[in-house]
Amino acid sequence: MHTLDQLLFAQHFPFTGAARKIILAENLSLEELPLEVVERANLMVRHALDGKKYAPELKISDLLLQETLAFPVAKIIVSLAGQPQMYTKLASMVADSCLEFLDRAKDGKQEAIALASDLDIAFDFSENKAFLVSLPLQEFLKIPFKGPSLKLVNQFVSKGQVFLDLNGFCRFLKEKAYSTVLSSLPVKTEGIPQQLKKIALGVKGEAKAREQKLFKAAFKGKLAPEAFPPCIAQMYGQLASGQKIPHMANFTLATFLNSVGMSKAQMLALFRKSSNFKERVASYQLDRIVKQNYAPPGCGTSQSQVEREDKSKGGTSQSQVEREDKSKGGTSQSQVEREDKSKGGTSPSQVEKEGKEAASQAKGKTEKESDSK
Image 1 (cartoon, rainbow, N blue to C red):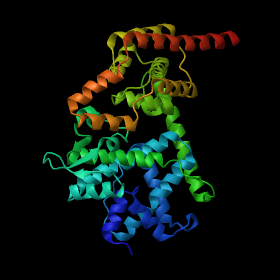
Image 2: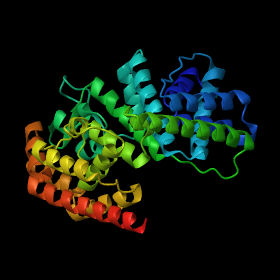
Image 3: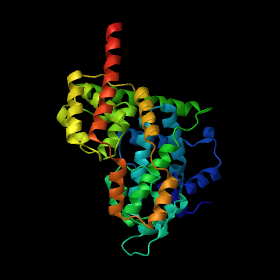
Image 4: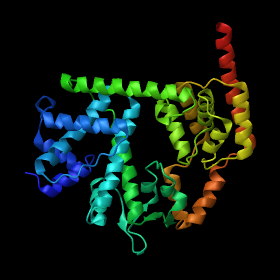
C-alpha cells in the first residue's frame, strides 16, 4: 500500500525512481490498464501537443495512482506517434510541471532536496548562507541549459563547485527533469495494444495537420518556429536561448529562414542572441545568403557537417576540466568568463572563410539540381 506522500511525490515527478517503484509494484500489463489511466495518458499527450500546462492538484489516492500510471502510457503514445517534436513537447510539459510543483510545495527546500536525491544528483549543502547547495562543476555541466539564467558565467563558482540558491536549484532540477524525460524517448513499442495504437494514430494525424497549417502561415510571412523541421527547430531554439551553435548550423538555419521569408533584419535580431555574435561578419554572410538565395541543406547533410566540425575542433573533456580546476584551486566567475573568451573565440576571418565554403557547397548543389532539371 502506497502512502499519500509517496503518491503525491510520484504524481508530481513521474520521471523519478520513486514513481517507477510504484508502477512496478502495481504489476499491471498494458492489456490490463484501467480505462481511466488510458484517458489520463491521452489527456497528458493532448496538453503537451497544445503546449498547455499540466499540473493537476490531486489529493485522492486513487486519482494520484492513476496519474502516476498514466505517465509511462503517455510516453508509449508519443513514441508510437513517431513525431520527434512530440518528445520535446512532452519533456517540456513535464519539466514545467516539475518547477510548478516545486514552487507550490509547502516546504520547497525539502521537496527539492528529495527530488535531487532521487535523481542521484551529487550535491552538498552550502556553508555560505547566500546559497542552498553546491554542485561539482562536472555535475552542473551535464545538463544542456536552455535559459541564460543557468549559464555557467552567471553562477558563483569556487574550487570546482557551482553554488545555487533555492530558486537556482529548482530551475536546475527543472532542466534535469527535461533531459531525463527526453533521453528516455522513444520507448519500445513492440506488442502494444490496439487501443493505444489508435490513440497514437490520432495524435500523429493532429500533429501533422497542425504542422501543415503552421507552415502555410510561415510561407505567408507569419513565422511559427514550432512548425520548423526538427533539426531546424533545435538550431532555432538553441540560438534563441543564447547558445553558440556550429558554423554549418548557422548557415543551415540562415538559409532556411531566408527561404521562408524572414527578413535580414529579423535574422540579425535572432543571431544577435548568440554568445559569439559579430555584427559585421553576420551582416556580410546574411547579405550573401539573401542575394544568392542559397537552398538550405537537408537535416542529414547539416548534421554530418556539424559532427565533423565538432570533432575537428576538439573541445575540453571532463577530465581536462577537473585537472584545470585542481591546478587552479577554484574558478571564480570572472575567471570562467576570461577562459570562455580565450577558448571559444573564432576570428571573423575564420567565420567568413567557413561561411564562404559552406555557401559554395550549397550553391554547387543548387546549380547541379538546376542543370538536371
